[in-house]
Length: 206
Image (cartoon, rainbow, N blue to C red; front, side, top):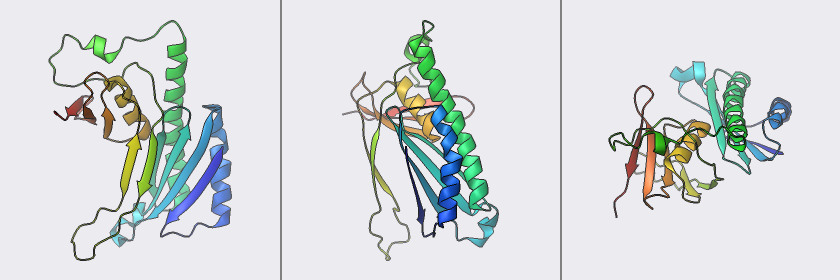
């Protein structure tokens, strides 16, 4: 497992890289097929954000789904501990799902469980298989004449998946939305988190 630590406008000292490697050693027990772990450090320059000015993002790439976690704190050590705690929870959830689907007690899928409900697009987390999502990230050139900036661009490629899979992937990366290609409709779609425990689905009509 390769561990890559980098900072955005932050100098990462060698002793912190060693600390990160020691902290991440234990996550291999959840998945023996881990390929790479990217750890990214961000510093919030706004003095009003001093209580959580240091942010750590961890991205785990394996033969299964991409799993992410991030956390903010007053220092990078506390932020790293919080992010790893979230990461372990998501890795454990992914490992539990693999064990369930290899056994005899496969849960009922969301599509089957909600077949009789109105087509509002809400669904809880359910069954289905996971897929590896490949991601390319770039930083666009900034135009100083504009009051707003796009600071990050990401391009994903993945095979079509079900709503169940998209919801599961969204939970693993810790986001409030997830863009995917719906294998049932063939449309680009987005699942997103609503208030409470509900989810929604948005699709583009050709």
